[in-house]
Length: 344
Ligand SMILES: [Zn+2]
Image (cartoon, rainbow, N blue to C red; front, side, top):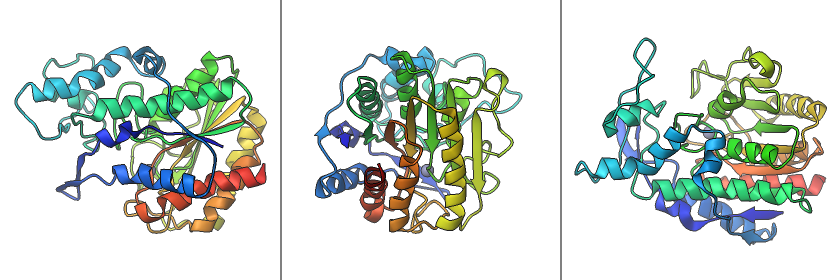
C-alpha cells in the first residue's frame, strides 16, 4: 500500500486548554512520526510526498471565506503584537448573530470555531495545507486507477472541521476534501467510514443533505463524549441526503466484541451502497490506553478492523485522524492497514 506523508505537519505544534489548564496539545508531531516509522519498519510500501494543490480545491467543501481565514489568521493575530498561540474564546451560540463576519481577529477566531481545541500558530496553515494535500494526492492516485488502496498520513486531522468551522484539532476536513475530489474525478458515489473514537461531526455536516456521499461513524455516545452536540443515532440525513447518514454511538468501555457488531453493520450498509471508493477516517483513539477517549480496543483488534474494512470490497483511501496514546499509535494504525491488506 502506498503511504503519502509530508514533514510539513511538524510546523504545527500547539497548546490546548484542557481540564482548565493550558498545556501542550495531545495532538502532537510525534504522532505522525511514530506512524511513519512503523510504516517503514513493517515494509508496508512506498512512502511518497504529496502534490501541490490550489486553495480552491479545499473550497469544494469549505466556504472560500473560511479557507481565507485559515490562511490569514496567524498574520492578523501576530499583527496585534501577540506571539503566543491564537485560541478562540467566544462563540456565536444560539440567538447571537452568526451572519456577519467580525473584522477583528479575536472575533473571527470564535466565528470560525466550535471550540478552543484549535490553536493557530505561525506554522499551522502550512501544516494544514500539507495535510489536506496528502488526502488529495491519495484520492488522485485511486482515481487514476492501478491502485486499490492508499494511506494518507494526515496531520493535523480533519473530521471535526465542517464547511465553515474548525474544532477538535481539525482545520480542513481532509476526508471530505478527498471524497469530493473523488466525485470531481468521476466517481458516482463515495462512502466515508469514520472509526475514530469521536463522532466525525464535520464530515456528517458537510454531506448531510447529499446522497452522493454516504457517511457512517462508530463513536463514543455524544451524551457522554466529545463533540457532545452531534452524533446521535437518529441523525439520518436531510432532504436528498436522508438515509445516507448512519451513526453508531457506543457506550464508554466498549471492547472489540461490542465494536465489531457496529463495524460489521456499517460495512454491510456501505457494501449495499456500492461506492466507487471508501474513505476511512482512521482514528485509533479507540485504543484502551488512549488518554482522552473511552473504548477498550487492543493492538490485535486493529488487524481485525482492517480485515472487516477489506470485506467491504471497494477501493479504499485511509485518512489518518485521531489517536493520542503515542506509544502504540504506530502499531495500531499500521495494524489496520496490514489487516486490510492480508484480507484482500
Ligand atoms: Zn478522535
